[in-house]
Amino acid sequence: MSRAAVLRSEKLVDALLDWFDGRDRDVPWRDESDPFAILVAEVMAQQTRMESVRPYYHRFRERFPDAASLAAADQDEVLKLWEGLGYYARARNLHAAARVIVKRHDGVVPSAPEALRSLPGVGPYTAGAVASIAFGAPEPAVDGNTRRVLGRLFDLERPSPAALERTARELLAAAPSRAAAVNQALMDLGSLVCTPKNPGCERCPVARGCLALGRGTVPERPAAKKTAPKRARFERAVATRNGSKTLVARRRRDGLLGGLWEFPSVVSANEASHVSRRSLATDIERAFGFQVGIGPARHDVTHAFSHFRLSLEVHEARWVSGRLPDAGDDGSGERRYAEWAWCDEMDLERIAVPVYLRRLISSGALRR
Ligand code: SF4
Image (cartoon, rainbow, N blue to C red):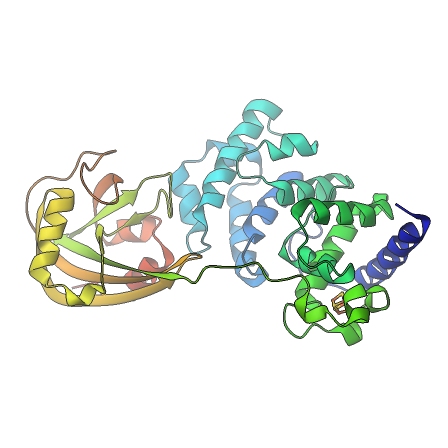
C-alpha cells in the first residue's frame, strides 16, 4: 500500500473511532467479553434486526450460559428457544458448533480464525467478528452494512468478497489494537448513517474521505446484488383431530425449517383454494397413506421466506382411518417427514413450529 493510501486509511479510521467512541448504542452483547456469548450473538444477529434478536439472546444465554450446556441440550429445546427468529439452520448449526467446541476444544471457543471457520455454520463474517470482538484479532468482519460502507468510501462498483476483505484489512492495519471497534464502527455506520436509501452524508463522520460522495456516485455504490423475484408456493395442510389430539409431523432436519413440527401438508401446483376438499383428502392419502375427512373450516396463512412466498391453507380435518407413516420415512410424500405425533393443546404449545403456525395456534382459531 502506498504512503498516501496508508495516511488516508489512518484518517478514516481516526474519524470512525472518534464517532464510535462518542456514542452509546444499546446492544446487549457489546460489553460481553465471553467468546461464547459473542458467537451466539453474532449468529443470532445475521439477517435479523437487533430489536428482534434482543429477547431471544437473553433467553438463550440464560438457558445456555456456555458451550457445554448447549452441547448437552436436546435439539428440540434449542429449536423451541429459536422459534420465531427464523433461519433455523443457524440454530441447528450453533448447536452442532457447541458440540464441536466441547469435543475438540475442551468447551472453549477457539481464537484462531481457521479454527473458528471450521465450526458448523461459521463463515468468514462470523469468524472475523468473533476473532476481533472476543479476541482482539485484526480480522475483517464484512457483513452487508460494512460492504455498503466500504463500497461507498472507496467507490467500488461491484467489490468481490476478496476485494472487500483486502480493503477492510487495510483499515484494520491503521488501528490493529482496536480491531473490534473498527469492525463494529463500520457495521454501525452502515446501519445508522450510511443506509441503503437516503444515507446521512451530511452527518457522516467520514464524509470528507468518502470517494463516492466526492464523485457523486453514492446511489450506485455498491451496485445492488441481483435478486430473483420471489416465486409463489401454494400448500394445503390438514389440522387433523382425533378426540382431543391433533396430528403433527416433524420436518426432516436437513432442509428448510428442518426439525420443526407442522400440520402435514401437500404442495399444490396452483392457488390451493381452487382445489376441492375431496381432492385434498385424496392427495393426503396418496402422500401419507392415511384417510382424513376434510371439514369446512379453513385458515389462510401467508409467509415470506427469503426465496419464495408461501400461501398456506390449513384445513380442519378429522381422522378417519389408516396408520401413520413410520418415523424417519413417510414413503411417498412430496415432503418427507421424519416423525409423527398426536398432540394435546399443551403439547402444541411446547413443540417448535414455524412462526406462521404459532400465530395460528396461539390465536385459538383451531380450538373447538
Ligand atoms: Fe456513506 Fe455518505 Fe458517509 Fe460516504 S459520506 S460513507 S456515502 S454516509
